[in-house]
Amino acid sequence: LLARTHARAQTHTYIQFPTRITPQNPKGTILDLILADPSVVSKCEVIMSTLSDHFALKATMQLDLLTQKANSSRSVRQLHRMDLGLFRAALLNSELGKFTPHSSVDMWSTWHAKFMAALDQHAPVTQVQNRKRFADPWLDEDTYQLTQRKNRLHKRWLKDRGNTALYFQYKLARSQALNTIRRKRNNYFTQQCRLHATNARKSWSLLNTVTGRHKNHQAPACNIAAVSDTFNSVVSDPLRPTQLICPHGPQPPDCLSHFTSPD
Image (cartoon, rainbow, N blue to C red):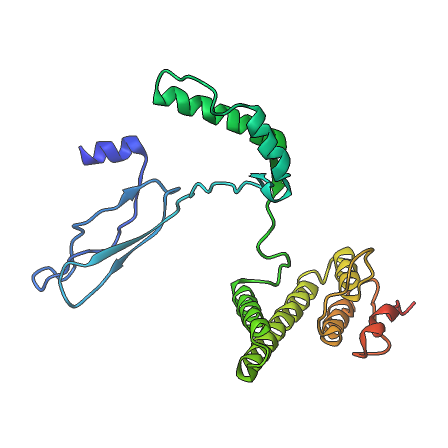
């Protein structure tokens, strides 16, 4: 029966090694089987142990988890922009208290309908685009926590400016946050330069981003000298048709505006 089921389902037998070895049977026997579709199980192995003569099995499965796509927008009411005077007048004109309901359910339904009609008139539901938690690709949870700690200390210090100890805590937290962001930003651009070494268009796009050449784009505060060294190293490959060299070497940020072709 097992053989017929195995053949009908076209499954694969993964266990080919004995799962039980005894002194009486040193060659061992296969007591445990794993029959599965190859698209579900990628690898199986027998874990040998001295605790027992019956070994354990380990299977690595390939599961496609269904992930729900996050909404790019949300529905909100901008109550802080609503004119409370006009909203109050609309409620009075709607005569919320002038009705004779037959039951408490009817009273609530009528009151709710009139209230929501006035609210929709003065504070309608609008769609707002969700902002990314990390606007830049080099920001992560560590930088977020450091920035939040720096902001909390700054708010506390603004309420108590005479507290010298709190001020130095804020200065230390600000220094840690800025140094971490700067280091991660340098690593990001350096990795991008190496990753897109064979893509001239992407390389120049990264260079323009670092130097702030893009229109209405402020150059990120990073170690441009280090990025320029990486850029020179990845584009000076003799196999490339055109070698782009910075004649000034790792100089101040203006040096990146002088990248020229040796031709």
